[in-house]
Image (cartoon, rainbow, N blue to C red; front, side, top):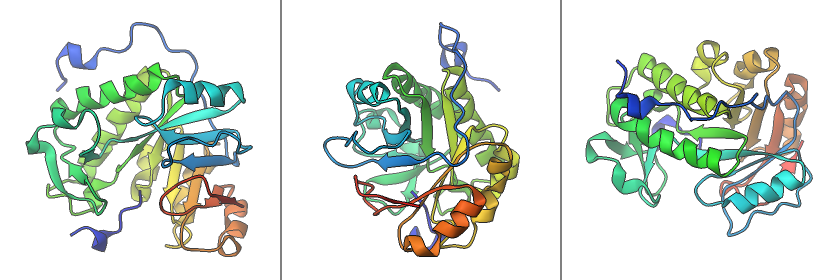
Length: 258
């Protein structure tokens, strides 16, 4: 989710970095302009929306949902929070208190100390393994811009770059594409590491041009607005070749695409 500043007050052991046993095949590369659906809430995913790409919760949705979408010819993205701790997740107790910081403004969510890769890498690897095992084509890692927020930790831009690249590598090692969530300031440094972007509210904050490096690299930018009517952002989105739609904050079934 988008984090507004005022809203929120070398190597590991081999066992932690081992890549999957089977060699991953060519990964999916979404191109600009693909239509998409983003549904993270609701007991059941509505698979009837006629779009080529779905983005759904990796924990909440079973393999059968991913298979049902694949049967309809759709690619499926696995939503995970990689930069924040969520107190309701089944693996929440595996995170030591030392890596859990301030609230990020959403109930039950707290920023992680992304400098502690010795702790976080195996936990995130296990999550991405889950996505792979359920058959997802890609990963949407959320909360990837803690360094510009009040996390409770003295995070630097270099810490964020290192961590974001680690998450991208974990997904790629498992044969899945991976998207850069928000983190607009670091797009120039990270566009080569990620296969697509996911952006919230760039039109509202007059920053959609920052996504241009992804479009120029022939990589999709999946974009949503919450507050603006489509009449105020779709024309620019089409010009920039963004995959844009209007959603409600709860990210349920409802959508209004450009």
